[in-house]
Amino acid sequence: MRLLKTGLHAHGDDKLELVERWGRDIPKYAILSHTWSRNPGDEVLFADVVNGTSGSKPAIVKLRKALERAARDGYDFLWVDTCCIDKTSSVELGEAINSMYQYYQNADKCYAFLADVANLDNGFGSSRWWRRGWTLQELLATKNVEFLSEDWRSLGSKAGLSTLIYGATGIDTEYLLGLRPIQHASVAKRMSWAADRETTREEDLAYCLMGIFDVNMFMLYGEGGKRAFLRLQEEIMKVSEDQSIFAWVASEDAEGDHRGMLADSPKDFKHAGSIVPYSELADYSLPSMTARGLHMTLPL
Image (tube, rainbow, N blue to C red; front, side):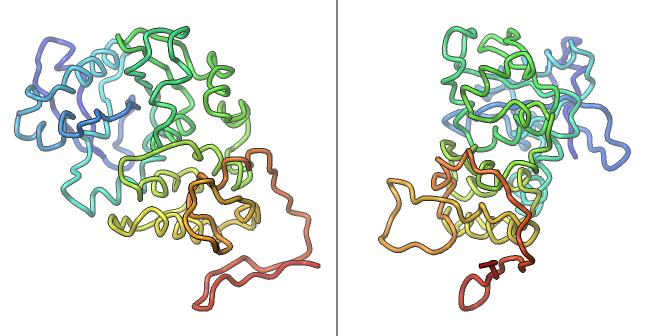
């Protein structure tokens, strides 16, 4: 993985430096969770760091503040999705997206930057950060999350703010704080956590959930959100016996009068947050997709 060095900037050098580390050579690092600018071109990308043009990007301020914060907390390295991935390479992008949950899980600390929040009493629960698809796994994967305000002041930790976070997300504290593995939550419950979230590219609403369900998929941008979400459910069925994947109700904005056994979107699980897994059924085979449709065996 690529990492940004924090030390040079902390000593007054504005040059951004990326290093590559793999496997056991990956050092302790912090990681940034944020929402992209509404104009993605404002962000500091990998090419900007390589070409030395990062200083001309509006989001350089955000990046500098993140580096300063990490350096102040004793971290020599910081991972940021905007510039630590070469998104012009489809192979690298696919590998990074499939590894994203692990990147956040292995980080020593995650800074969750809420660019539209001044303080806890002013818009914390309505921040845009809570409605983005990718930030769901970023919230769950890293144990040590510190929330930062628009001016980079600390708002508190994930543990200290767990009640407020539950109010904003509906995620039970036991899963939020890692007291129980998220895999113990039903498929339907985990899907419900994403029901009100959005992504810029429609396919990403499926891709951003891979880590939460511990599956991998090829990235096929252009396939459409419905097809991507169908593939996600097919991958989940290969590794899970949890039949709550079928416990959904078509959302109000669903298209068409006829639906299959699988949902079109996480929105279809909006009201499935209370469903718990039940595994003491008679033997049955894992559901699978065939040329004729979904094949499954259920007890009577």
